[in-house]
Image (cartoon, rainbow, N blue to C red; front, side, top):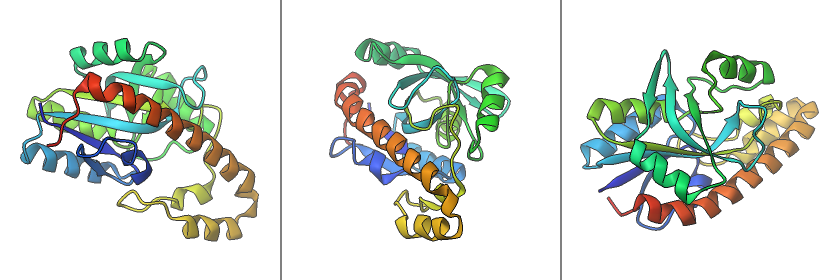
Length: 220
């Protein structure tokens, strides 16, 4: 099986073993869809959406791991592959099985997160999983979603943080600093975002060591 992985950021891609087919969507759903279609056209036989995510369920904390049982994509819920789901849950017994919301825009406030949680009970939100699920379903391919909570449900994202990523998934620290100079009140929130993201990325690195064999990562 030739597995291709879609992430949002280069820092997430760096956690994967060498040789795994991975592409960064930069938090842009349309780019995630295009990259997934390119992988399918190039011979991928399975897709994975992997990385950090925003928490929607108030019970989740930074660093908690969620295995997607399905993805909420617009008005549709697309079920993840059952074999992979069970294999991942067995490999990560402390993980949480739940619905993932594939967002078209950032859920930047606690109010926005509460609304998404109330809609169908999605426990986390990210910008890539909807596209990955849609492309996989259209191509008749299995897919899996593995997400680690960064910002929890009760925490918003400061405006300055929104400029922190380019379309290729690279960090843009100068853009964040520029936003902070315009909005110095964002500083406490930015510090919190950094701590949350650091905890999530650390957990992501550890879980990849476990799920790699479970998924059978191989070069495309």
